[in-house]
Image (cartoon, rainbow, N blue to C red; front, side, top):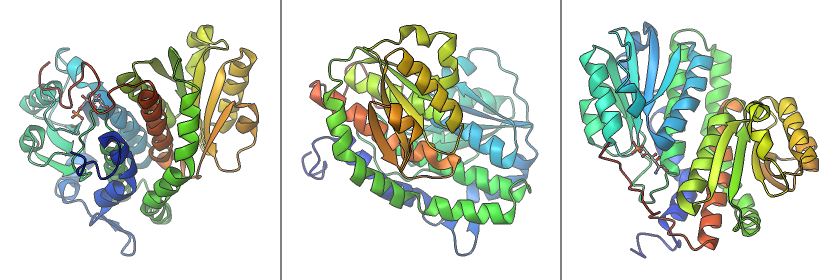
Length: 370
Ligand code: AGP
């Protein structure tokens, strides 16, 4: 096992550090920047099905569901196809309206999640075209879908999903750009600039790992006795906030909630006092000014702000108690980059609390029962 961990203390840390490579592997053979194309046979062979879809329904659980929410932002923004995102466990039991004009995308690292599998079977019976985004090759979900794309992130052993999540985001980004280019919603110049930016994401992740690892480790030490955390983000980073909170809960057993930052005033603001740590994802692109005022509201109530901002940030950084800098990207890539320090934060808080990071209590890597 020590050998498999490759010198890291836990699989989770190894998998966090593998992300420059795993994202690269997800894009390998698919993103051909010089030719200016995205090659995805699973999409291309059925592109008319996607193009003529009434809507795309994404079904998943847990972290994969968070990836699905970001997929909704991506596909609606770049391909202009309506998207709905559903928890598989809710979808399967609520007699959903599904027609043969719908495309259902299931996202699952393991490809074995019972609720996701059952929801897919239901969609298939109703005539929808079903597409899988799985990490485990030849898994049950990969086998029952009409087509799909593997994430190729490599085996994920830590129960808390890290590299599979960023690989799922990478696939969803490729799908959104490919469909948008095909149906004419994403013009050539924008497509070219977005794909070259995507190509550089592994390098940016590497930079984030190098520049934030030690810093986040130190920040974590200050929060080992916290009992609650709030994670806030807007737009693409709202689901990134949900995912950051889930990571913390599942491995450190600290209660954490993710919220769209603007929803704070509709309830969670009542929780804020000097004992409440609040992680704010505030990159330059994406509602930055609005986030600045959210941070002002938090500081007025003495909340402890840990801000994830772009390099050289001034306004949020001046108010925050802790600042984690990440490189600037187009908004659509920011959840991939911002997720990395949040994974590290959850990891180190859990380690310092003496928790079993790779196998947290009550959790299984794949949930094959409902
Ligand atoms: C992730 O950290 C969790 N352990 C969990 O939420 C997981 O994402 C969920 O069970 C779905 O699993 P899947 O992607 O294998 O379907």
